[in-house]
Amino acid sequence: MLSRDEIIEKAHELDFEDIGFTTAEPFESQRELLKEREAEYAWATASGLDLMAGTDPKNVLPQARTIIVLLEVYFRKAYPRHLEPFFGRCYLDDDRVTKDGLAVRVKAFRSFLSEHGLESKVPFHVPHRLAAARAGLGTFGKNCLFYSNSVARQSSWVLPIAVVVDAEYEPGRPTLEVGCPDWCKNACIVSCPTGALKGPRKIDPRRCVSYLTYFGSGLTPREFREPMGLCVYGCDRCQNVCPRNAPWLAANLPENERVAKKSSDFHLEKLLHMDRPYFEQRIWPHMFYMSANDIWRWKMNVARCMGNTRDTEYVPELARAFEENGDERVRAMCAWALGRIGGSAARRALEAIRPRSEGIVAEEIDYALDLCD
Image (cartoon, rainbow, N blue to C red; front, side, top):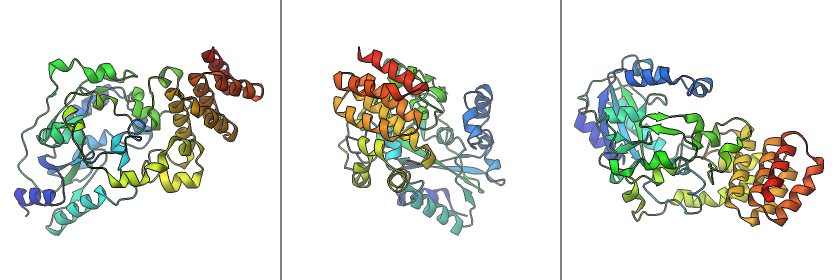
C-alpha cells in the first residue's frame, strides 16, 4: 500500500499547495448544524444537493477509512481588475465544466491512487472545509470560510478538495478553532451588506449575496438591490475586508492568462444583450450555476449592477434591454436601474415605456420615477 509520504509527494508533484489526512468518521457537528437550520438549507435539498448524506463519508464510499484533503489556491494569479468587482474570484477560473485545469490534476491524483490499489471518491457534498480543519490544514474565519495554516500567506483564497479513500492513514491534528484576532472587530460580519453572516459557522445562505446572484428566485427584492452592489455572480466582500487576507491581496501576483483571454466576453454590455448561443459558448462553461433557461437571471443581475454604478453611460443600454427582453423580471430590473442612475435621460426613457407597461414592470417604473425626483 502507498505510504503517507508517497501520497504527499505525489500531491505536491501535481502542484497542490498542501495536503492533509483525517478519518472517515461522520461529521456529527455538521449533521447537528443542518438539523438546526433545516429551513435555511431547504433550497439545497430541493436542488438535489443532499448535504445531510454528505456528513457520513461511508454514504459516498462504504469502505471509506480516510479522507485525504488536497488544498488548492484558486487565487494564485491575479485576475483582470475590471472583472473583480463583478465576479467572485473562485468562479473566474472554474473548470468544473471544461475540465481542463484543476480537474485534470485531481484526476491524475486519483489515477495514482488507483494504480496502487486504492479506491477513491471526490464527493461534492462532504463538508470539505470541515474535513480540512479536521485534517489540521487550517482554521475557520468568522465569515465561515476556511483559512490555510501555511499557504497563500495563511489566507482564505483556498479550495479544500476532499478525497475519500478505502485505506487507513494517520490523521492530522484537528484545528477546528476560529483563527481570527479579536482586534479585527468582526470586519467581515459588519461588512456583509445583506446581513447573511451571523458568526463563525453561522450564515443564512438565503441572504448571502453569492446565493442571491445565482440561486435567488424571481425578481430580486428591493431591500437587497443596493446592498448587492456590483456583484453579478458571486461575492468576495467578506474576504476583501478581512485582515487575515490582506497579506495575499498585497502580493504582486502574475496575471492569470486563462482569465485574461476570456475577460472581454464578460463585459457588462455583452452580458446584458447576449443571446442563447453566446451564453452557451462563452459564459456557461465558466460560470455554470445558471443554465441557459436562466439567462434572464444573468441579465437581471447585470441590470441591477449597472444601476448601482450610477453611470449615465448605461442608460441607453438599459433602455435597449428593456425593449428587447420579454421577461418581466429583466424589464422590471432595467426600470429600477434607470431610476437608480437617475437624471434627465433616465427619466425620459422611463416616461417613454410607462404607458405600455403593466404589472410588476409598471410598479417598478413608478418606483424608478420617484427615485429620479
